[in-house]
Amino acid sequence: MNTVVLGLQWGDEGKGKAIDYLAGSFSVVVRFQGGHNAGHTVYYQGKKVVLHVLPSGIFYPDCSAVIANGVVVQPLQLVEEIQNSRALGLELHNLALSESAPLILPFHQQLDVVFEDSRYQRIGTTRRGIGPAYEDVVGRRALFVNDLLREDVFRAKIAPLAEYYQRLFSAHGHPAANLDEAIDHYLQAGAFLKPFVCNTTRLLQQALAAKKDILFEGAQGTLLDINLGTYPFVTSSNTTIAGVFSGTGLSAKAVERVIGISKAYTTRVGEGPFPSELTGASGQKLRERGKEYGATTGRPRRVGWLDLVALKYAVQVNGVDSLFLTKLDVLDGMAEIQVVTAYEGAGGTSAEFSPHADALSQVRPVYRTLPGWESKLGAVERFRDLPKQVHAYLNFIEDFVGIGVSHVSLGGERRQTIEIGV
Ligand code: IMP
Image (cartoon, rainbow, N blue to C red; front, side, top):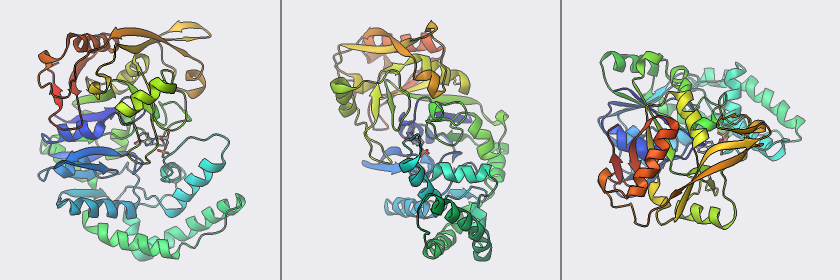
């Protein structure tokens, strides 16, 4: 069944683990948006592996792993990730890279850093050049993977763009960088990547026609969506269901199921409103228990209680069919667990979610307190063996957001996952 897996919060929901768990039953796994700002953590043969652009399908030799046209690609980083994966013994025969994926170029990363360090409003980006690369797509200046495959084409196209950026940097008081070396490295990366490059839209359409099961692997989370997230504290792509279609060339009819991933609590990296944030000692405790440090940047994540108002919004905008709830074990031993059920603002109490940062930063959360559980969940294998307080917690979430929980994750390992019929 063609399935989209999406993060329902501000990223870092445990999509890597969830997708790795699900990927085994699919013939194709495809990344459709974002870039190497993502960090999907999976455990492979007992080793922790963090994937940034490679789809989680690479761990299954019979599964095609596709980087589709919606993903922004930094070629040097992709080469490194492929080489690291080969060092783990993965052949990557089944990797396909879209010829139409936009490139992240050296000046994009530089601009991301310049903006972050100087702009009137810091976003707290991953400083990987993601935003500026997508800006060039919208500005109709972008270069694509295909352009990298022919030296004359690449040199001819990058020269005017480099000049455009040099002017921008000098206006900000930054010295002109010599790009000659970087261009050579990009061309070498292009030669390395060439065997993987193809028309992924055609490949996916053929897979669809052949009735192969496709898993669409979302990156970041719904509340970071450029159009539907907590703007301006968002990433620069459609992290919601909308990104699947523009990012692959498949139609909405290709999607048969949407699984939404949420932690049993909430985290966020970077700036922006976070109504249920826990600061001080309780926040620190949750951060340590959940090992909440960024997979890509190592930054400590901000942490807080599960926000059901935000979760319901994410379920609705994506048409989520079922929830995959991760890191439930992190709440082990807590006497009480809180969830947000409404917001208080100037206009009174409401359970409506207004994503724009200006609106969201004005609200105060209204909590419902639920009983915690004493026991450790990590070794529980069957749904019925979970403590009754866990059942109550899951039921409360299901009733509030209006869909069922299909999976719970109780630790980092693939086997620490319980599938629940919904
Ligand atoms: P950018 O995507 O690097 O432009 O960063 C924009 C915002 O998205 C920042 O708040 C980042 O911390 C956040 N972000 C980007 N990628 C991820 C991710 O994979 N997980 C969590 N947050 C992310």
